[in-house]
Image (cartoon, rainbow, N blue to C red; front, side, top):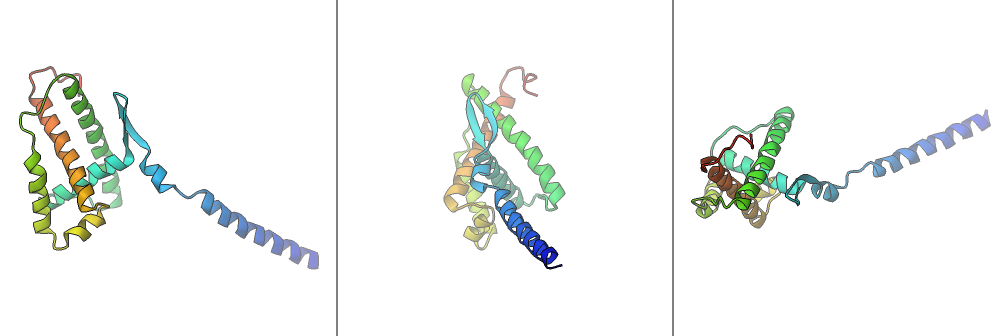
Length: 168
């Protein structure tokens, strides 16, 4: 009976050690995950971090213009998938425009500053609000600039006198 008790104790200790070890083995390396490639267009790689910045900038814009944004886990997942498709399409459109000399007629440089002012007016604690989305004021401005630039190229592409059917 003593041997059986010792065996059970050793087995129990081994299970605890393995479960503790297993948890550390299965941890997600967040930094590596954020640097993973979500798209590659014309040799340029776009990371998950870049997409999440685009997504969060869009959510902030929509939210501060009073649009409904997804809140449930299921809706957020579906919306992110939709936004990822939009992001990749917009990058491809920008690349096509640059390669074919299609420039936005009007670069919306003032739009970035206007959007920042809008968010500052609507949010009493602007810095904390941005932190909730993983931004500093500088990274938000950069992400917002990319969001507006991709929108500019999308507008230029759709208004250009070319056959758009190959893209959609």
